[in-house]
Length: 418
Ligand SMILES: Cc1cc2nc3c(=O)[nH]c(=O)nc-3n(C[C@H](O)[C@H](O)[C@H](O)COP(=O)(O)OP(=O)(O)OC[C@H]3O[C@@H](n4cnc5c(N)ncnc54)[C@H](O)[C@@H]3O)c2cc1C
Image 1 (cartoon, rainbow, N blue to C red):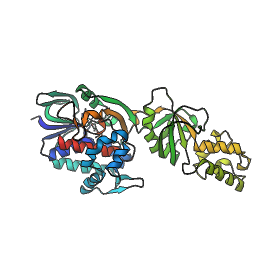
Image 2 (image 1 turned 180 degrees about the vertical axis):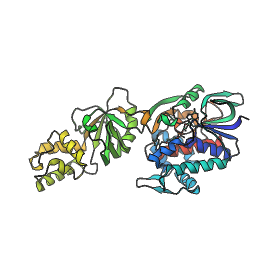
Image 3 (image 1 turned 90 degrees about the vertical axis):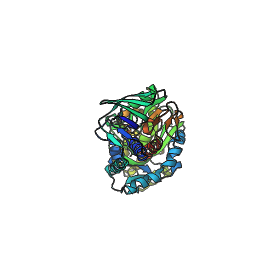
């Protein structure tokens, strides 16, 4: 019999929790997953460690999503970060909070998070169909008609949780948008977010592998030719955290978090990133420290003095960017030259030429327009019986467990109502 009360499409965190909740309420529930097994992104999340949420309250999660975060109030009231942690702890997954608030399984194994979800799933009595992608979805008189690669199904209600189009090799190729659009919904243009930033500076490529734990990165209007950006630029977005130099440009949490602002800009526009490599120290204080260091050890290379604060290869490159020889002794550096070094360290100007796109994006910005969804139930306001959850929606948060939390919470709420 292929008539179901609820068919959930997509076995990511949103779909798995939606199916668990719907089945636990006694609804005859089928979960369709295109891959050989569900939860592929859970397994690769947080570098295989799965940063499942953030140690904050519902308000903290809402704020992190910016203006669209308001949409999450009801979903977080039903399943907030604390309840999510309790859910996993009740399944035997002990969690730990890292400094900065990221919550991980204590084992640091994403597999344990997925195993726990699968235990909930099987207990709930829901049915799983893997390697069975949905290929068509239509509304009919009594509900929905769904076509998969294997069969035709009917369902009273459908939960679509097919994710966005980031990391398409995980199965998330964005087909959910097509059906939702056909059913009358608006799609806010999908864009890659949390993806590495590409630059066209060969000297940045040469820094590949260098990590700096604390930088302030600002996306500013306009481009400059000089390595040190001017003091007054209009800051568009600003993030602070760790950065990683790569052969293509910039990666690491702070670059990923800023990338949505780069990918939203029209092709050909090359925004400037201003990088403060020592955000704890003001320009004047840094200049004073350099001068003191130079008078104490004047025979030392200027670059080796910078190594006191920054990795060696980066220190060498910065001295060159300040138009000085890396061999220059600190006592030989004039005041204007020292000023140039300070500006290069505190306002390093890097031109972004784009991002690595959906291929490497951890999430998709854009998606199903939120005003067309009832945030109290996750039901479509356009199509009765259709529920939407997870990354398919126009919601994308920063790094730190926010995106998985949103997927879990919206999936849970959809399953409570479908
Ligand atoms: C590399 C990487 C690391 C990440 N790390 C973190 C992290 O540490 N913390 C965090 O909060 N977030 C992280 N994220 C983001 C997080 O994984 C996603 O936001 C989250 O998985 C979205 O959940 P979802 O259920 O909406 O969609 P997804 O997890 O994308 O699941 C959608 C599912 O739908 C299936 N599907 C698609 N089309 C069909 C179809 N036609 N028929 C049937 N099934 C279909 C897909 O195969 C997929 O299994 C990371 C993402 C990536 C790519």
